[in-house]
Length: 136
Image (cartoon, rainbow, N blue to C red; front, side):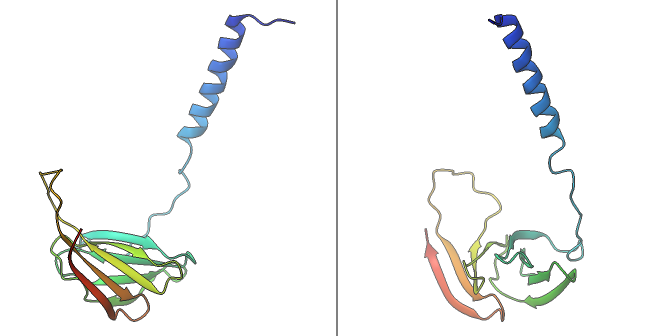
């Protein structure tokens, strides 16, 4: 039995509406977590590979935090990467190290290649492992 193009169009429209309604409801099951006081601006956050710890960097010489998601508390706090705008933070594959990349507030020259600093720290102790200055 042949279907008309109008019937096909109606079926496609129904499918699209169904997907749109389902898409509207995604990510509605979330929980707001208060990590630290509002007095610090957070600049970077990364979830460890075991999904138990958040590594959190903040701006303007404020501390770097490790936050235990199960116990809902800050487990460590270190002074690292003294950068005004803060840093991105990324865990290593085995959660041994954290890579911090210097951030800048505003860069109007989008085509300007800016030299940035990086730090590799031990993710458990906060000890500086290696600092890279003026890299691209």
